[in-house]
Structure formats: C-alpha cells, structure tokens
Image (tube, rainbow, N blue to C red; front, top):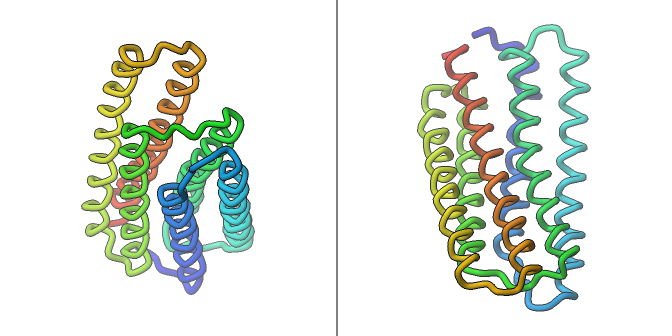
Amino acid sequence: MIFSPKKDVFFDLLFTISENVKEAAQYFVEYKIRNVSDLKEFARVMKEYERKGDSYIHELVVELNKTFITPIEREDIHQLAMKMDDVLDGLEQCSARFEMFSFTEIDDHMVQFFNNIYQSTIEIVNALKLLSQKKLLDMRTHAIKIKDYETKCDEILRASIKNLFVEQKDPIKIIQYKELYEMLEEIADSCEDVANTIETIIMRNA
C-alpha cells in the first residue's frame, strides 16, 4: 500500500463519519418515546445527525477532488463513506416515519432491531479505528460481526411479521408496523454493505 501524507485526512474523516453514525444509532436506541410529543424531538435530533454526516461527506469529497495520491483507492474511500451515510440516512428516515405515523408503541421486535443495529455501528467504528492504524487484516473480525447482526435482523423480520398477522387486528397498525420493521431491516442491510466494502478494501490492500 502507498500511504501518502494525506492519509490522516481521509482516515480521520472516515473515522469521524463512523463515530457520527454510532452516536446517532445510540441516540436512536436510548431515546425514550413515551408520547407523541416526544416524536418531534426524536426526529429533529436525528435530522441533525444526518446533516452533520452530510457535512463530513462533503468535506471528504472536497479532499478527494484535490488529492492526487490517496492511501487506498479513492473509489473505496468514497464507497465506504457513502455506505456509512446510507446507515445514517436510514436511521433518520425511520425516525421521521415514527413521527409521521405518531407511532409510540415500540414492541420487543423493534427493540431487538435497535440493539442489533447499534451493535453493528459499534463494530463499524472499531473497524475504522483499525483502518486508521493500517491494521487491515484485523478489520475482518468486525466485518464478520456486522454480517452476523444483519443475519439476526433477517430472523427478527420474519418473526415480527409472522407475529404481526397473528396478534394485530387493526389493518392500519399492520401496515405501520410492517413498514417500520422493513425499514429497520434495511438499515441492517446498509450496515452489511459497509462490512462488504470493508472486506473489499482488505482484499485490495492487505
């Protein structure tokens, strides 16, 4: 690998993006929705995380455009940033949907989704920390863990929808729950996309 003097800029920015995603996921998991009025604040704060993430992506793209030699393939740097941004966008969109539905009935399946997604973002941060230390092969362990969490979310989705049609009689609630379950599973898929990009970087550079 060729490590240029600009390596700290790119790796630091990628790590900063990952930290912002993890902090957003932590807020998403820990925020207590007790009533409809809580939802507005929930969606507002998640939007702030999303805006902050967009500003980091913009900063990274500016650096890419003005740098001739990058520490790893510029396409990989850009792809990794965008895949992490997809996770953040998914969390923000999900919070907006909670508000739009005035949805306060968080069930056990949603809590399981939340926790697995949050654990995935922790693994993303751990992997990006290793990238900045040039310990590429060690990143694979974290990529594998992210994929394991995504597999769990697949199982939660199947169980949650099966249970939904048995327990829920209100057709509006069925539509709302199903859409939110599927949005949460898509966030887990986005985490897996980050893991796949990490594995591509390992393969090309280790």
